[in-house]
Image (cartoon, rainbow, N blue to C red; front, side):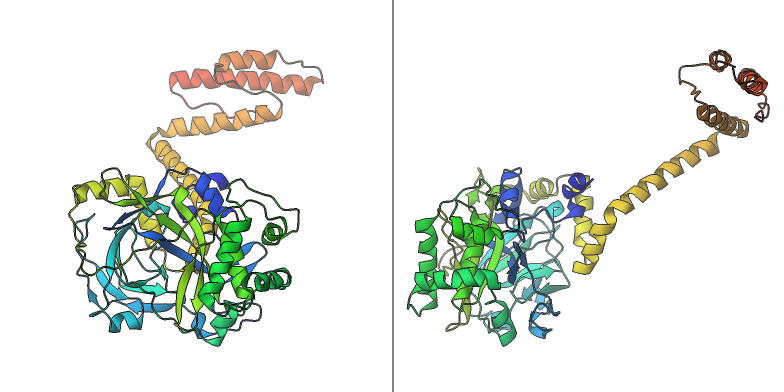
Length: 482
């Protein structure tokens, strides 16, 4: 059951999430060629963020909620906020005929700079039955989507609100928007578990030395990993009750992106630099006809983002050996419009897939919030079983309603008599006639006294009379009492 439900959309997003170290690796190697995203853009979209995490504990990354989390008290700065539509969208979709998009400014700065802030737009098309995660570049300013309002978290990512059955437009600028951290977020995004900090703080000082510039410190962390580690998708299992991140630093074994991104965040935080763990996809594959860009399961990735207090902006830190961060650049003089050779109808058919996929897409589109999603995940298996029983009982009742009343009574009596015989270790085979079963009953050893002999004769006689009565269209005789 677990395996079955994990492979359908109603069980989980199926998009890369990456809260547990090792889960992205599993996503990359499991059906690596499966398409995750289609993106229409003049240039390679590069790194698209899906989820940003706040703190690490026991091999898991967690998203902070406005509740008491360890020493972090309830604060409104961690709360998601609603973003209303500012008007109708103006961007013409390339993969769909639909034009009912609405414009949403993700930051107040984006709204203020909308007229003079050069941006480049990309059109993202999710695979609906894979989940509701919205993917966007770091420098996203505004978006156009099928929605009445968006819910955005404190990392500037859309938590929910978009109907992913339709494409959405992301406008990205050259520089990320400013983000002023309050004390609560500053403490949260510099937190390192005590056991990890005891090991990494001396190492971070050794790596960064007396460097004071945040970006140069990040560069030194990147060089540390590139010079001392190798990349590999082969899993390494730490001993029981050993944190995999601590084991990674202790043994310096070959690892995949989750270890490098997690280690980078931990080292930067050990230097007092706010940092966050980010997961998403690297979109750099141009499909054969050169109409759009594709991200597949194998393009799932994790990286770090660090905070520059001087500029009040976040910047990417890619420390996985063999990887180089890339994102859209804005060139106002470049013609960003083009006309794809494929038709919108072809796009809709390619992405939607099948009727079953559309049903799944509708289900994931109506998920309102995380509590509802959690309840839905827990209840889906019992609901499926209950629904199956209801359908089976209804079909059976319809069959019985259409049958002759005498047939229903006879069938009920025969099943009851068969159950009584089964308790006596006499089971009527499906290929046996009533007379054959009666003969077999009579062949049973009657030792045990007159009472046993009587019920053997009575049972055999009833089965013969039942067959004769049904042949003649008469009601069967009452069952013998024994």
